[in-house]
Every structure is written in C-alpha cells, then in structure tokens.
Length: 82
Image (cartoon, rainbow, N blue to C red):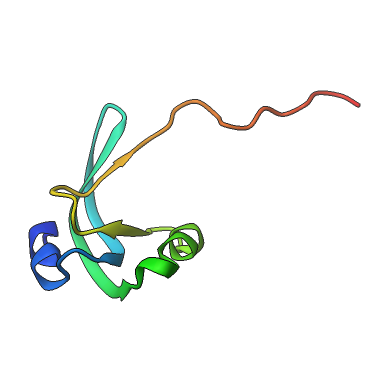
C-alpha cells in the first residue's frame, strides 16, 4: 500500500507499519510501500515507536511523506580499556 492510501485510511493518527519497500537517497530512507498493522493511540505512540520490531515503524499520517532520516555517526561512544 502506498503512503497516501494509509493517510486516507488513518487520517491524523499514529500507525504501526511494516515496511515493504523503500529507496535510499544520501541520508534518507524513503518508504514507498507499506502494510499498515494498526492505529496507535497518541498516548502509546512513544512506547510503540521504541518497541517496534525490525522492519516496522510507527509514523504519523500528518506527514505528507514517509521518510526515515538515517544517522551515519554513532550516538554512543565506547570507552576503551578499564
């Protein structure tokens, strides 16, 4: 299903999605095909976001495009030795 179709089915909601297809451009993953799993109540969106399985994402349908911004640099520095 295309993102625009998901937006029509679940207007102004958080939705748990299974990512079926995407393209990468520089530091972005542009999602082109998804399978909606279920709507997520706003009060549970943060928890659902962090517990989503690999290949899934929680995203808000208020966004015109479904894009994941990729980080190339690590956020965590490992301490050497001790």
